[in-house]
Image 1 (cartoon, rainbow, N blue to C red):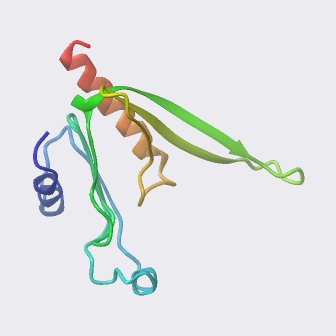
Image 2 (cartoon, one colour; image 1 turned 90 degrees about the horizontal axis):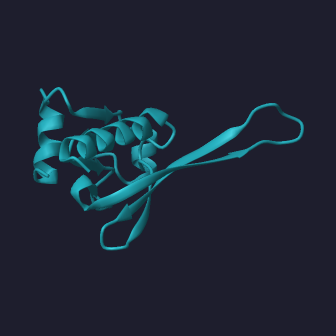
Image 3 (cartoon, rainbow, N blue to C red; image 1 turned 135 degrees about the vertical axis):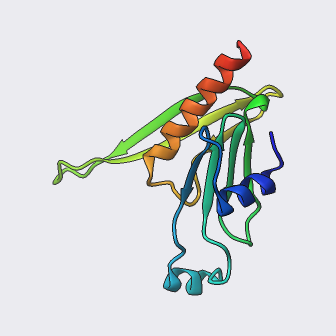
Length: 134
């Protein structure tokens, strides 16, 4: 996988390769002020055929997943509803299993409500596995 900071830099400046997917959003002024992140760059998640890199803010380390390190992943979903409502709130994440036996729960920190991030991660990992013949 290319250096994560290089991936983020290229995604911020554009253009990016066609097989990259970039998720970004503006950091709200009020939210940035309340969290002390108003001067940080906007949140950014980049999913490539080699992995995923996410920048949340300067106070948090980069979230990096290198697909070469993964043995597999499992989609997990739970739902919650209240007896007086027909609405269901979904909680969606990926359980990542690494070749070294580690397990990790993955969900974008900045884009957790955007289910497209999960879908894109699964698709990119599937392409990665297909190209590696595993």
